[in-house]
Structures are given as structure tokens and as C-alpha cells.
Image 1 (tube, one colour):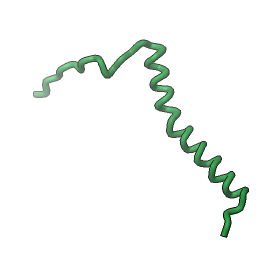
Image 2 (cartoon, rainbow, N blue to C red):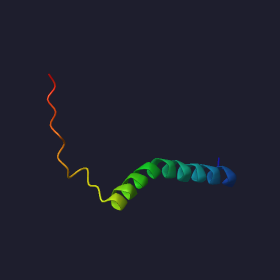
Image 3 (cartoon, rainbow, N blue to C red):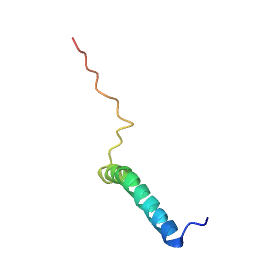
Image 4 (spheres, rainbow, N blue to C red):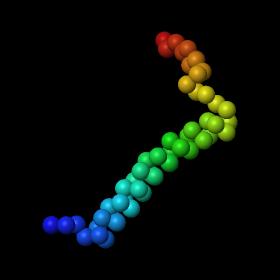
Length: 51
């Protein structure tokens, strides 16, 4: 049985929306790093000693 065209279009739309929602925070984080010039992966973390 073939899937109706309307259902295929809805599935494709939902997949695109899901990928956009997943990727948006990552893109915004990288954009903020690029704008601010921060490179947290290059900075050495401060050493804290817990007693």
C-alpha cells in the first residue's frame, strides 16, 4: 500500500522541523563563540581543590 502524498509531505515537514530544533542551540552557541571570540576548548580549567 502506497503512502498518500499528503502524509509524505507532513513527515518531511516534521523531519525538517525536528532537525532545525535540534541544530538551533548548537548553531547559536557556535555563533556566540564566533562573535565574542571565546574559545572555551582552548582555555585550561581552573584547578580547584576540595577539602
